[in-house]
Amino acid sequence: MKKYEHRREINPYLSIVIPTYNEADNIAEVIKRLSYSLNRELKDRYEIIIVDDNSPDKTWLVAYDTLRSLDISGLVVVRENMRGIGSAIVAGIREARGEYIAVMDADLQHPPEELINMFKKAVGEGFDLVIASRYVRGGGVEGWGLHRRIISKTASLIARILIPHARRIRDPMSGYFLFKRDKVSIEKLRGEGSKVLLEIVVRGSIRSVHEHPYIFRRRSRGESKLGLREIMRFTHQILVLSDYKILKFAAVGASGIGVNWGVLYILKEFMRIPLYASYAVSIETSLTTNFVLNDLWTFSRERSKSVFRRYLEYHVAQLAGLLINYITTIVLSHFMYYLMASFIGILLGFLANYIISTEYVWGQKRLLR
Ligand code: GDD
Ligand code: MN
Image (tube, rainbow, N blue to C red):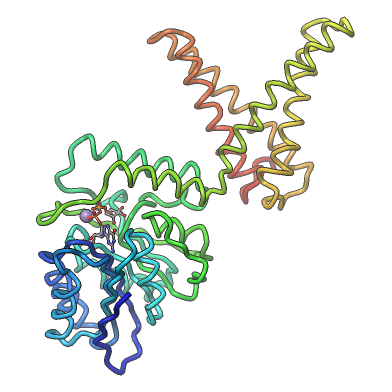
């Protein structure tokens, strides 16, 4: 790792971290436009940290020359044996000295002029985290086909389902954001996936979030690095960040089917209890074993409410899941093969159950007064 510094004796208020890979055609303009809009309010009170993974097009050299010629306090880190946007961002955050730390891309898809507004919002209104958001009123994307829109929206939806901390955020996949440094234990960040924002939301202690609308611009030069590999890494990242809870929850649910059948079989075959009664008992038994397993395993660290309340609310979660399963199956069976409809019903019912469980039963919200 090499470092090229152009630091002046200042105590920065804002540090801007920019990961780059083959952005030689863009980086100078990003730095220029940033400095024009920041100098008016923050002259000499910000620093720019560029983390480049030894780009073949020598982005780091262009970046360093630009910092020097504009006399901007900053640092260019060149990593010679590492590749990856997430780890690059985290490396940059570790170098940052500002009270506020911003992260943005170097390809001008994130308009540099928005940063000063985001910063003012954070300082002026005391937000711990300000996210440049495509998915709030006034925000959007430029020049995306339906295909990319769907991929992006689906990824956001998955992140919001799996990671309860991300649920209140409309654009949790944003790569353009700003946070207050003392709200995040920086040594805990790992940068294993590309979405450092998600990591900050999960591992930090952010209390207030504002989403600032912006238009994600078309990339005019260079190319996007998003590919199948990124999608795989993203999936892995959100599973890790969510502590694999949805998989544990699904495994517990599957065990419940076994309990349900086993109890039903014993009651019916050995004890000769009529089906309507056997079935009621076996359903409640499996619901209870599911509850106990989730309580002791899946959500062992989320047991803040009384056990009685959790048990009660879990019934509501289960019932809601069943109801959604039922309605979905009935409605969809008009349009498709009924087993297919039932499959989708089971899936949606499962998700409803999971969301209610994480928001209420093992979450902060209260379901029954
Ligand atoms: N150091 C380093 N190493 N930088 C990288 C690497 C890498 O391996 N891969 C990409 N970058 C840099 C790019 O040079 C650019 O500045 C930034 O990371 C984003 O890369 P793009 O390839 O342009 O990503 P994108 O346009 O598909 O997606 C971006 O925008 C989305 C919307 O805000 C990313 O920032 C996403 O995280 C974000 O959701
Ligand atoms: Mn881009």
